[in-house]
Image 1: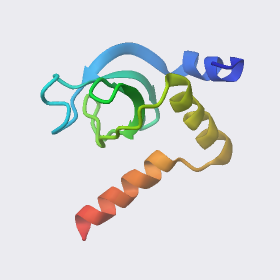
Image 2 (image 1 turned 180 degrees about the vertical axis):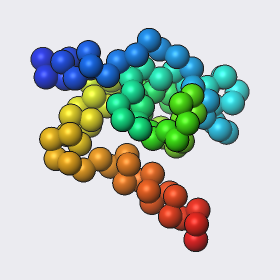
Image 3 (image 1 turned 90 degrees about the vertical axis):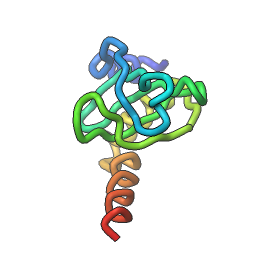
Length: 103
């Protein structure tokens, strides 16, 4: 990680803890959340072997399943980009998903 990424990481990391994600996380008892920022989490997908970002509505439950297979520093950089640019693709995708459910 770059120094800037490491500074951000130090501010958002949490002790790894399993959060539920249905249905994909059911078999393994959930996925490991390693960072929380706002209403989003960075979590490790042990099925696809990579890190992802998703929103959450309730603590302990990951709202969306992704299979990005990102390195941790890529997920952290995405958060840095969203802070700098003011646009968070994870939150935009979550709103789109919610809109589709209503339709």
